[in-house]
Image 1 (spheres, one colour):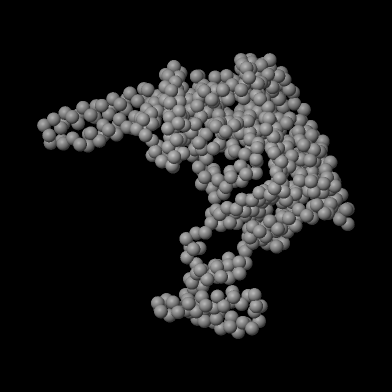
Image 2: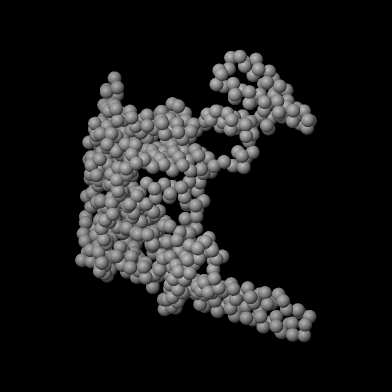
Length: 633
């Protein structure tokens, strides 16, 4: 009966998705300009009169090195600042501002790297970059840089303005010259405000404004470990606007606000990493897990590196990785290739190929020889993550590992069935094969529920893993997830934007052709393949475990210390019960509770007697409090 049902289900999916991703092929038109920039054109009329377009730079955090970590992501920010044509009211004045800021910042960097770092190494200061630890010389440079940046952006010189207002407040209006001085200072303030408005050279957000007026939407970009991608959706009749805007951005990007934008990135880092319960611990876990590859540092970069970028270093990086020989354009939507190719050639051919080709990533991840563990306390529900080193993108074993994760995931998957519905020790679970360009890993993660503990989650995972290693998955179970994968693959090809991003991602990691090839390879995975990879990569010496326990709060530390004397499995429940008892105001109810518990004392197992005695003691203490204060009801 099960085999018949599985066959019926497979036929049903085939009928629902007659052009399934297993059969459907993307057949783009591809051409390459003389400067080396490749374009992938996919005409389709599913979404009439619109085009989703983007360009890929084959560079991400894995291409960086210590000292400039996070610079790929920083460029993502900088490339929305415009060019000498877009984003400025006066290109010459703007260039002068940038030159003076570069001189100041280079001097600041050298001062910090020498004087301030040495003070830090000697224990004289706790942060070499903090303004609170500035010497007079460094404070002067910092103030000059801020004044320049404020002027460039048309902001008031707040230091000078504040000084004038302070002086104005000190004038005695009754003095003989009080009125005259007041008038003079007010005139100076007015002059400063008027001059400041003339000084500014930046037109904020002009890049976005031009696209928006042209009907563009979803303009954005993202940076990952192995790629950077800029994208937007425009009306078909505005495709030439995209060609001009993006070729200008790549040909003439001006890194204005280079030194102020790092404050924006610092704030992004604070919000996304430092202000989240487990953010900084995840960075530490990554750094522990990846021993030798560039995946060990965060995409957003280390804080000291964010502070240290120089324009010279940035331009060197830019001229290697953001030149046309390292770029790929993707165009998906309602267009005729013969009509848009001349526009692409006209605008993007002006880009100059880089003199230095992007170097290959040489350092491979070293083999892990022993289990690694990180035990952390955070303001979160107790949880666990377990990782194993596996394989990179398009490796033959990546497909059975992907299918293994499908067997485990979802509401009908093994993890949910066993840990959420079965033992009820988890509120959520997941498994994932993360295949990157030069390496990969398989991760299991889960969050506790109720009295569940990270140790129980870890043990439950090992039980499920052993089952995969010892028993081939059933034909019906495998076919079910294959049907889901086929449906997901089919849906991924329907929306222009989703296809655009998917093609770019595949191209960066190994080839856009994976969009066509992976569905067939996933469908070819067998139960024996899954069992083989479960045995091959999931050895104890190849795993790293991160355990997160809830950070004790002030309320936790105020709980009766006698709880610590109870057996460990009882302590969490005892804390909950004490909290309820010590807030109870029903005196009669407490007395009845004691009577009932004492009546059942003889039937309580010996191992539970410490818990019962403790609860009885606390109930009597609460009764005594209520009787003393008169707060009973």
